[in-house]
Structure formats: C-alpha cells, structure tokens
Length: 235
Image (cartoon, rainbow, N blue to C red; front, side, top):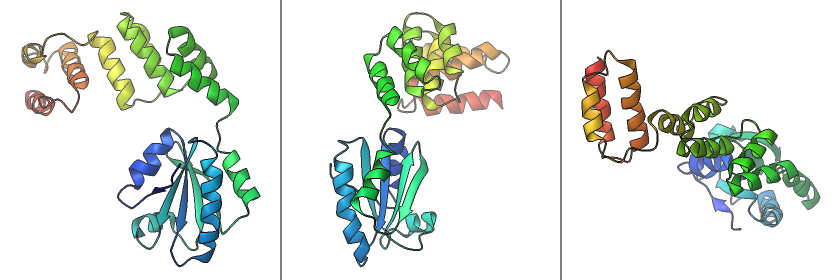
C-alpha cells in the first residue's frame, strides 16, 4: 500500500477521520533530514506488510506548518500512531526495523477485534448481538442492529439500543427512523407543512418534524429551508 502524502488541508480527513476505521501512523519528515530517509523505507515496508490494517501518512513539516505546530515538533523524524481520532503511541528519531515492527505490532487488531468485525460483516441479528456481547459500545454493531430493529417495526428496541452510547450522526438517524417508522413513501412536503402549525406548542409534532428532517438529510435541498421555517415558528 502506497503511503499517503498528507497536508495541513487533508490532515483531518486522512488522519483523524481515517483513524476511526484503521490505525494511522503519521511520519513527520523533511527533505533535508537524513534520519528521516533512513526511517521512511522501514516504516513503509513494515506497514505495507499489514495489508491495509495500518495506514501510513507522511507529512512534510516544512510544507505543512499547521500540522507541525499542532504536534509541537522539535525534532524529526517523529512518528505518531492514531486510533479513534487520538494519538495512542509514538516515538522520535530513527529506529531499527525490529523496533518499528514492535511499534506496529501493538497497533494490529486483536483476535477479538477481528471476530467483532466478522460478526458485524455477517449483518444478521444473531451475529450483531454476538458482536455487542464482545464490544457492548461498538457503534457499527449498534447502528446495524438498530437499523434491523427499525426495519422490523421494533422502534422501542432500536431507541434503547442507540441510547447505550453518546449520540452521533449515525445513531441520531437510527433514532429518528425508530420514532417515525420506515422512511415515509411521500415526498415529506405535505407532512412537514401540516406539522408546521403545531410545532410551537406540540412536543410530539416538533419531534416528528425534526426526525423527518433528519431522515431527509442535509443533501436534500429542502432540508435547510424547512429548518429555517421551523426556527421562525419556534422563535
């Protein structure tokens, strides 16, 4: 796997967001840095051997001062490992291959983590429940099982399930679908227009209105307009 060249502009997407899915190793380097040129190929070789389980992101500190300042870089090479959007390990200076291998080995998924991934991929209720037995707060499993519950008309179970973890965009959409039911077959306009006169004094109407907007999503060109109209009615 080819290393990703990351910039100030792409750091959030290529490192922080991507590390929610796989471990990302950030290599801070510069063209003038001799030890960087020694360490770089070792990192590439060891990480390539993980088959995509770990991703290498290379950042030229001279060309990307924003990232350099964020890391408070004082010397390079500097290497940081990210998981779940946060730094979990790191080292500075050139290291032998054995040390790099040991560093990367600690980032590899455990046998249990691999089992959870497989159970989620299976996607049936029994497998998803088994995944949650192993990782009770796994968002992927919670969202997938919640969607199954919604599809089967088990909205209360879906709501109880997503309440296990902090709200995210994905769990909010599951909760909205659980309250509204399967996505309505109409184009929403009639329903939303009918609800507008009730949203100020009727909590249920207001929740239904917000839930439908959640299901429509920001990509629907009508969503922003309906949110504006809701605000006008409320305030």
